[in-house]
Each structure stands twice: as structure tokens, then as C-alpha cells.
Image 1 (cartoon, rainbow over the protein chains, first blue to last red):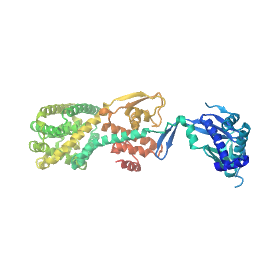
Image 2: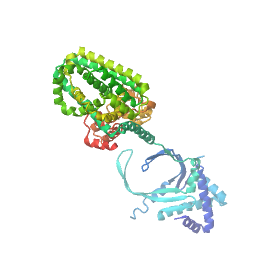
Image 3: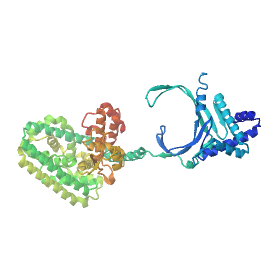
Length: 97
Length: 504
């Protein structure tokens, strides 16, 4: 499912045109991004928690070139799915197989 | 900065921006989440442009264990929700560290590799010195070495049946030590004064001249033995003393020895023959060789050489007299193959002067031998450094610290008899670290022999402990010293030796 599909679904639910929906969605995403980038964490009910954590500086080893690399610290986005969603999706598609 | 933003606050900010009611925004957002959830269920993947991609990732059944009870449990196959942010978001998030880049850590091994390669070339240069001499020289060098070995064997053989008492043997040892020290002095002095290779020849010539004028044909043997001493710096005083025995035993004893050891002495006879050849017809042959070699500096150095020759002669005569009075009987029986060998060619000298050229070619090698000999003395002068092992140190790190080359660590290992396991040193114990005796902290050939011994010792330990890596140490040892059998005190496994010989 891509953005177009999401917009189409939302537009249908709320009886809005797609462009409008798209604009609204962009604002939502923009707000999310700003908060994440500022290091704020927030929880969306039924979806999960977004946040940030920092990966410490570390050494890595390239076995092919047999080189050690020093990797700098890195800030990454952290997403923890909500418990309800996790449980709901845990077996999705598995019992089918 | 990193605050917790509530859902309510989010809705407020969104509603403000979109000029919609909070209720609508809340409901819309809830619906948005529902759409995502539905999408994950149906498509297992939802992509939101500018934000990120939610994925449902299948995790296969696997074995795990409960960390509290340590019971093994089977984790059933399940789905995991993964969120991968868009590149823009990732870069935005990582902005504070964006200027940092991965750096390549220079491994220690790289630097030491280059150093190690530099060292063996140094050593090999020294070694190559010998092959630079004429091709025949190579053989003669080996032969000479075998000569000395043979002659020593002969000595032992003749010594045993002599029933010589402890007194005699002790005086023998005393003599030996004295001789060595004297020789050492001479050689050190000699090298300092005469840096040119050619001087060796000049020296030889002078030596021969003096002897010819002063001494009889029989004493040519003393000369020979003296020269032998200088070349090898090995105690050959028995040869010097044997002159007396020659007079007594004359033909009888020597002849017997000749017969018994003729096979062994065969080589040495020839070699000495060549040496002898060049001595008696000195005025003719050596002057010719001088012209060949163009000894221009000879004239200025003759006085120095003459003095050193006289000193050596005095020492020889002194030793001769000492031997005469202290251990007359024992030495008389000590007639060995070297004497018999040197005596025989003495008769042929006149006829075979044509080979003078060949013998002059050997001069540089003799010089080489002398150099080597002086180097072998050096280990006695080598300084050791006592250190106390501190926590965290390894032989490798100590070697890195002291030599700037961690790969010399077997040298330290070999140098400390207290060490058994090369992989284990105990903090607080003291170690004596041998220091390289070469100029500019370099390794001399004697040092590299020691290093090779260290590697062999390491090899031996690993071999005894059944490590498959053992032969690698032998391989490295080979790089430091070409003839491992020379310095190994045990029998080296054939296969390992074959492996090691690939090093050259």
C-alpha cells in the first residue's frame, strides 16, 4: 500500500477530494517529522511510539578487506509498535500458509 | 529537547496548522492509523511518502531460551512491524552527527608488516655478501666449516684414548679461554684498523713473509693453525702446540691419523693445500695478486700490519711455550687431523703455485669469515634490559615497545628461560629483554640468529603442544636464519622443514 492508496482510502472515508486529503496528510507527516527530528517522542494510539535513540560510536570489521572501521555515533528513528497492533498482526498471514 | 509529546498536543498543533477542528483532526488521525493497520494486514507494507515505510516482517520459528529460568523454548513464527524512515527523515534526525564519517582504523599489523619486510632485506644483504664472492668461494666456505668440524672431531677422537687427566684437560680449557680472549682482542683491533678487504691480503702476505724468513718449514704449520684461529676464532691452540708433538711423533702418529682420518681430512687437505700454495711462494704469487687487486693503500698500512703481525706471533710463541711446559705430554698426543692435513700440502707447495690466483680469490671470504666471527663474539657484549611485566602487557606488546616490531617477541621468549608457555607471561615477574646490538638499533646477523632461535623455541613449544600453527614459526625462523639445522638443538620435523624452506 502506497501513499496514493492511503489518500484514496481516507478521501473516501471523509468525503473529501484527494488533493485536500493529501495536503492534510502532508501536514500530519510534517508534524511527525518535526517532532522526531527535535528528539521528541510521541505515541500514536493503536499504532506505536516514535522516538529517537543514539547509536554509540563503535568499531566494525570488514572481513573481506580485513579492515577495522571506526563508525561515528548516529541518531536514528525509533519506532515501537503498539502492543495491540503487535498482537493483532503477529499471526497475520502465517496461519494461511 | 527530548520531551514526551502527547497525542493531544500533536492534534492541537496539527489542527492549528490545518485550521481544522481538534475533533476532526483527532478522528482523521485515528482513521489514518486504521488505514495503516488495514494496509499492513492486507499488503504487509504501507508506504507513507515523506515519512517512512511500515513493513510486516515474518520471523521464522527459532530456538530461544528464557533468560530467567534458562529453559529452552521455541519461539513460534510471528510477524514483526518494522518502520523504516525515509531518507529525508533519517538525515534530518542524524543532522547533529552528519559531519562525522567512518574512519579506517590503521591496524597495527600493517605498519609492522612494512617494518618486517625492511629488516629481512637488511639481513639478506649481509648474507648476500658471501655469494658476491666468486662462485668457487661458496664451496670453499662450506668446506672450511666442515673442516673445522672435522678437525674438532679428530681432536676428540685423539683426545679420548690419551687417558689424559683432569689436570691436563683443565689446563687445556684454561689455554682455550686465554686464546679466545687474545684472539678477540686481535680481531677487534684488526677490524678497526683495516677496513679494506684488501688489507687482509696484505696482512696475509706480510705474515707469510715474516714466517718464511724467521721460521723453518715445520713451523709453517703453526702459521697455518694461527691463521685458522683468526678465521674461526675458535680455540685451535692445540694445533699450535702440536708443533712440538710433530717433532716427537714426527711421522708415526701423524701418519696413523692421516690414514684413519684421510677421508675426513680429504677436503681440508685440499683447502689447506690451496692456502699453503699461496703462502710459500709469497713474493711471487702475492705480489701478482696485489697487482690484480690494485692495493694502492698497502704501503701506508704496512707498518700497522707489521705490528699486528708481530703481536700475533708473540702470542702464538707464548702459547706455544706455555703448551710446551704445561701440558707437554698431553699435547704431544693431541696431534690431530688438521696438522696432518696441513703438513701434507706443505710438500706440494712448490709444484702447485699455479693456483695462486684461486687462493687470492678466497681472501675476501676469509675476511667475511672473520667478520662473522667477530659478530658471533658480540652477543657477549649485548646489553639486556630488565623490565617488570605490568598488567595487560604481552610479549607482543613488549616487543612492539622495545623494538618497534612486535614480531620479534620470540626473541624475548627465548631469552628468558623462565618462560615456558610463550602465550603466558605473569604480571609482576621480571623479564630480560635483549636489545639489538646493531647500529641505529638494527639487528646484526648475530641478533637475527638469536631471533631465529627464538622462533625455533616457539616452534618447539607449539609443536610439543600439538598446535598446527607451529610450522609457521619455523617458517619465520627460516627468514631470520637460513640454516635452521645449525641452530636447532632438536630434530625438526621433515615436513615442517620443507614448509619452512619455502621461505627463501
